[in-house]
Length: 321
Image 1: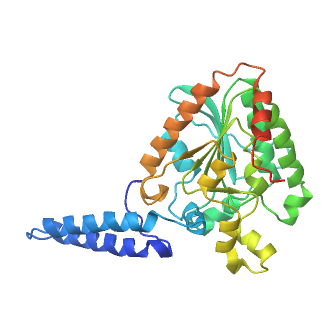
Image 2: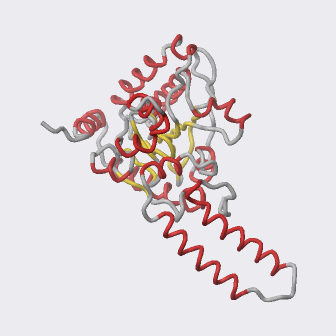
């Protein structure tokens, strides 16, 4: 998808108006003998200027909004563009298949890998099927089954993260969602294959961490990775979700802050205006980064991955005494 998106956030509306004017002018030019070249160029220049003004200094809350943009590329969109021979595998062999988490073997530039990915929906029907991108315990157990398979067959694991958090419903609690996530953390720490985690949208709470104990943690420029969503934090601290923007600033959700704290290892740039504006460029950026990381992690000797991960997570964050 490389076209202009017609859905927009509040702070994007000035840009959307100009883009609509450009569409109408180009349509008029195509349907008549009149030459609108000068007018089209003028609007295009104004669009580029407005784009720089709108996106040059986004707040943490605005970046959270971009991470949730309805036209942002989801995991299947990226898998289709980055990987070949992806074969989705289903079920956790214990309860049922969880459609909020997909995965299976694939190839990237001819290299076999195991892909684990969280998945949202774009409309009501898809969101109900995908549980709004909130995995149940069987989703994490399915991920663990696939990661154990990857470890057995020496396949690097690539995890695409995009979830508000694990599903907090009664059924999930009855089937021990906290235990499922905890087991994933323990097992991922010990796998003897390279693991790369990439936050492509929302990285909320243990729901994200349950598939993110990795040798390298990457994040897209406008994604976020946090112990809690801004709305959840606002509900606890201010007793009002209306303070979500304040919570976003306090949580330091900006990718640059995450990099300073050592929570992520690299920020991947997005196209001007966000990943939703050009899926193909976003995919090319991600593919290049993944290949670079796979090459670097290939230098780690078998038997050393667990210690490598241990040291990485021990160094995270800064403690003030």
